[in-house]
Amino acid sequence: MKTVIRPLEKADAVCLAELDRKSFSLPWSVAEFEQLTARDYCTYFVAEADGRIVGCAGYVLLCGEADIDKVVVEERFRGQGIASELMRILIDYGEQHGAEAFTLEVRASNEPAIRLYEKYGFVTEGIRPGFYEKPVEDAKIMWRR
Ligand SMILES: CC(C)(COP(=O)(O)OP(=O)(O)OC[C@H]1O[C@@H](n2cnc3c(N)ncnc32)[C@H](O)[C@@H]1OP(=O)(O)O)[C@@H](O)C(=O)NCCC(=O)NCCS
Image (cartoon, rainbow, N blue to C red; front, side, top):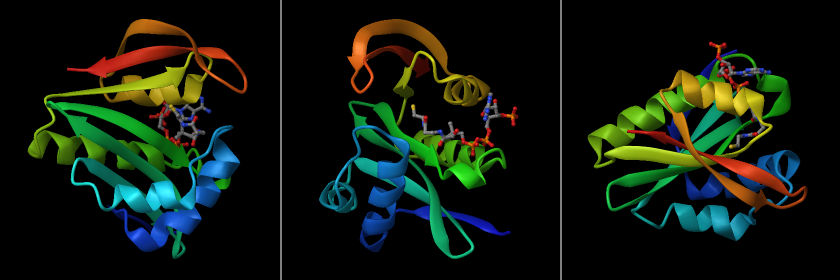
């Protein structure tokens, strides 16, 4: 299987919204994904395998801080290094385009994601109590400086 990582395009929005709906309890709409491509402070990459979208990761850049969001890989493609590749490309791109630091929130119980972020140099700097809904859970706030 060949996986390609490339920038998000407007035409990906329908597939991404579907992936998001399967993966998160409060998913974004197709329109919200479409809008990402029109905002120059938003940088999102997708992973394509077998000709379809199987993963995503991106950030919003404000004042030199890249706030990472929507890191997701379709369930049956997990454990194959796709999220690692997305994170590597996202961070490299950010460092070359004005990101001085990266931050993100993650559910406190989400071990796979926390491990992934630690692998890329993120450390937990705080807890946001009750940040998540459906179900309510604390967020770990992680930074890569
Ligand atoms: C988190 C997620 C994106 C990882 O995607 P993935 O493509 O399976 O990740 P990779 O195969 O690139 O693995 C990267 C690292 O993540 C960690 N990891 C991945 N799956 C893991 C698991 N089941 N248990 C523990 N650590 C895990 C490991 O550190 C791994 O590195 P290693 O293989 O060198 O040990 C994926 O599980 C996912 O989409 N989860 C649902 C959505 C989500 O929770 N996103 C995060 C929101 S903050």
